[in-house]
Image (cartoon, rainbow, N blue to C red; front, side, top):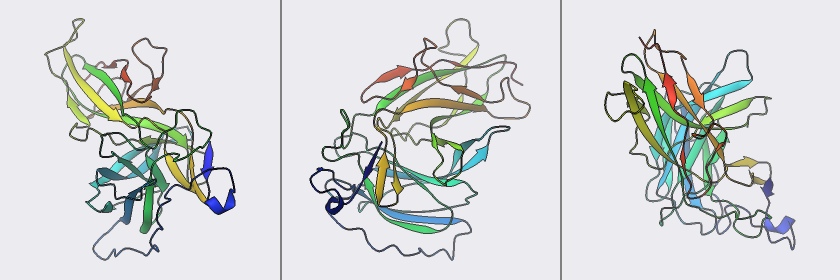
Length: 288
């Protein structure tokens, strides 16, 4: 884990503040007269070059507590893309806890680390630094951007076809100060891929009657988040899970499913740069 600090406070440690190369504008409250929910605005900038990040996506998410646990599953309220200047604005209902999750690609198609921040009300985040460690930060192989990770998988349903919502998740300690765990929905870099799949009777194996396949392109570094005096990021590749919910009531067994491992049932879904992983099947039975 590393906290990026201003250069003036670290002397000769050769550590660069995320967002170096330019100063952030003074935050001001965005206009919310026409919005009945939370308005969030900001500008995505490369933390090394200070250039606008135009291939970015910002997602406002709200969490729902899982019964008898301290875990919250987050789902998207709204997603918008950044413009040519790296700017975005979104408006969506926000129920606590809420967070904004940002992902982006650089001009070569490599992925920035996600940027995550808690959101409780209308706010302007100002300049948002997209990027990991930019100089010597003590992280082995940590990069400004890195090749995306790919996770593929199959959803099956019996005895009837079903529509299933599927979302990659990343779990981290809550950013609102509570002693909870946030299972954040991570936006995908291949954003033409939908999160809703219809199982069909074609292309299936092992006498499975109905199936569907997904492919998610994901960031291959752990998120950056704001802390007092700078920004923080954990070293290493993120470990993902895949969460699936069949539509309809009554539905299937289980009513929701989470996959944590690759096909061998042992290896975690570690999203290292450039890796291609095959997740365990999501098997839904007794569907109605």
